[in-house]
Image: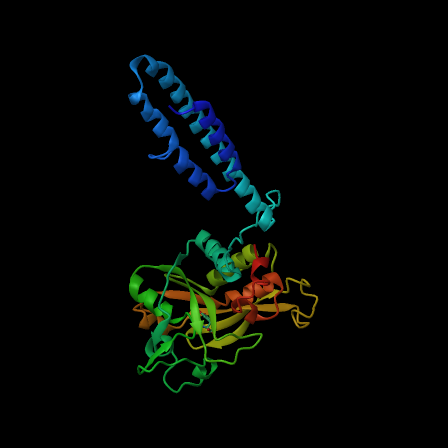
Length: 341
Ligand code: DAH
């Protein structure tokens, strides 16, 4: 018969000496494993005379329980000690503040576009999206730029390898697409989107940029409607009391045509570096839709009239935020972009 007291002392002493997981596991196999010393002591119950079994049985079960408990405690203690050692080794300081994840935000041009959408949306304009890849016919011919027309010189074009398929140079071809879609209903849409020009990239021009076109077609639409709409727009975007100036200009698809300036938002019209001492900042082109263009969209110019305008959101964002180089917008500079919240 095993000496249980001695077994317990021996087991406890060896358990206390087990300093790591593998020593602990060796201990467990030796004492608690299927062929270990504790199960062997338990099995001895069967070989005892019946009168001795009860006492021995109780004692061996107590021993087994106590040893098992001691084992669990030791296991926990070793686990904690090894975690503490690990933390110590990497110099991990749980009291340090966490690392803030970088939060993304909308691009300044997306923000500007949304402001423009909201202003025109409130005036009843819907957004009409047209394609970026256009044909020569829609980008130029239907807008009154016949082949060889000198006005084409103003819009250096990316051509594709397909004949007469190109990247649109402006959002104006969407006017024709909107008219052909809406006819014979009246139209009040803005057409935002990317445009492309085969140009030297400078502080003032990019190869890719946005435009927001506007188009209204209906009965009795006049230049006064155009002026009122643009005045309301400019006041919403740039502040109440803005003055607008309409200068005669030329676009093949509008007649008459104008370029629109606002009084300089920096100096209020007195003259400064931003407005080049003129007191005015150009913000868009506009005019009454040319009769040929109305006709190309399916609307009879004797029955319908309309106005159109086109603006560059990059230029507007530059004015609003005092940015002097358009290239910042698309250079993906993480020092520039987060400034616009
Ligand atoms: N499409 C012109 C351009 O890219 C901008 C423009 C001017 C659009 C006058 C218009 C307009 O609708 O009426 O230069």
